[in-house]
Amino acid sequence: MDQEKSNIEYSLLHRFIVWRRKKRMSIIMLIIFLLMVVFALQFYLIDQKGRLNAEINEKEDEAFMQSIKVKFIEAAKLNSQEQNGNKRILKDVERLKRLEQPSRDEIIAKRQTEKVPEAFETDQQLGIPYVITNQKNPYIPKHRIVHFDLKGAPPTIDYFKKIISLSKNAGATGILIEYEDMFPFTGILAPLSAKNAYKLEQVKEILHYAEELKLEVIPLVQTFGHMEFALKYKEFAHIREVPGSPQALCPSRNSSLDFIKELIKQILDLHPSTKYLHIGCDEVFEMGECEICRTELHENLFLKHVQNVAKLVHEKNPKVQVIIWDDMLRHISLQTLQSFKIGDMVEPMVWVYAEDIYRFVQPTIWDKYAGVFKTAWTASAFKGAFGETLYIPNARRHLENNLRWLDVMSTQSISFKRGFRGIVLTGWQRYDHFAVLCELLPAALPSLILNLLATSHGFFNVTQKDQFLSALSCPRQSDNRRPIPFLSLDSDPNMWEKLARCLFPGNEFFKLMYRLHNMENEAKEYLDVTTKQRGWMTAYNGKHNYSLPLRVDELTQELPRVYHGMINLARNTVDSLGKWFDNYTISEWIEQRIYPYMLELEKIQNQSTTLKNVMYWPARPLPILKELQRHGIAIGLN
Image 1 (cartoon, one colour):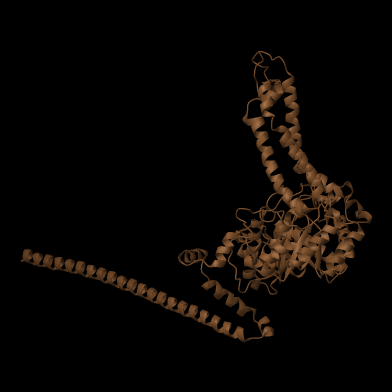
Image 2 (tube, rainbow, N blue to C red; image 1 turned 90 degrees about the horizontal axis):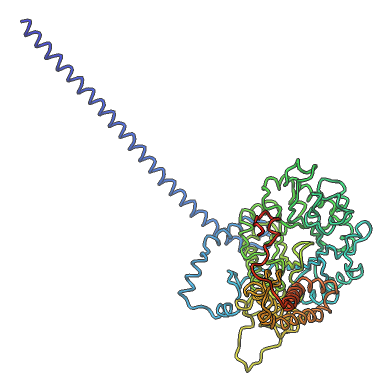
């Protein structure tokens, strides 16, 4: 009985254990099932939320587009007074236009499949750079200002007036004059005037002539960087930022502000009716280096100095608007610019001379400027931008720079409360006070007229042919001749070929640049062949007086022709520039451009005479060069 009872108890216990295991498994399975349900429900809710958000966003986008269209219709009905109070509407319209504008690749692909319009074929033949412009409703800057940089190369008053008149006829509304050392300073600033600076009466004559033409005159005086014309002198060396360099003045010294105050006074006294004063402030390469300035942030130093200079201008004449170059502002934050309230004191002139404007001034910078300034200026170039030693501008590159500026201004003008003031076509004479002369005005006049017509019309094409040729006094093409393009900027970017017969002021020098181009190439090739490619008149031959007279004669056969070609070129330069520049400028230009070749050719002539006078030659090897030891090059002397 006990055994049977024990078996029954064991059986019951076993069943109970099995039942508990099954129950535990059931609970676990139930928990797993519930977790799966929870996860599925969460996924479902997230999906539904995403769908709902997508629907909401889509409806919001549709509502936004619809609101813009409604605003566009409303804006079209508003009169000019109402439109001034609805800038937000106009910005939304511009945003709509950007959304709908095809990309550049789409435009090119479309043109490849369509028949090319005749006008575009003409632009291609002329070599006019391709820039998207609306020729039916072009953007035309209100002010088109021509910049005259006078650094050490003042044109005669007669020539200055001729260029001003031509500029006016081509669409200019004003001139920006950067006198530097050509201004007739007096008193403590008298040493700043160059020996060939304009006299007081000459400046007045220029200003009076510009006033007769109803041209805006804006003087420019550097007040921070590019102060070499003043700080190079011992009398003003104490206000340098760096004792050994005259590039920038120290903004933290009272004597610096006293100097700037007198500078501004003399400039404004001679320009009593000016509405603007450009105070420079570009490329301040040396800043925050003296013992006073080094404890302060560069951007704070810069903005404080701009504030101080602007205050000096307004103390002298409260009605004068101050302009500065923008490059030192590009990396200063919006908050810092706003904290200094710089937008209440100056207007920026945004300068880029390359073809790709947005590479140097990105959209974010434009947004920052629009948040600080109510308006702005822009600056392109017609000369002096693509090489410190060029003697004639590449008109095609300058045209593309100006056309791209028109495109950028058209897009960005709506961001500023008052749009853009205008564009300045800069024409640099030197890259700084110590640099050599680059393109002189007679060589750059065709580029100036070309770019002025482009900025005055909002585009450039064949429709401006007559105005362009007439401005440069070019002969008309005979009717019986086969029509040919009046420009070929792709193959002739300097316009030598097309404008060779034109009679504009300074045309002789313009054509002389083509001769210089050919003579320079010929002289370079001759010098290279004679002293490097051939083996009888190298530096080694000259040092050791060791060569074959027969070969020397062969190498110098062309020397007289090349040398006298350079001499004649220098004489023709004097004749072609004599009416337009003073003798100092003419002499400097010849010394920089032509005289170095004359010296090199004379050196070859003298060397050839010396080599041919040798009658007997030593046995080889020739002596080892002892000077190598001075440089640590040890070669034993046998």
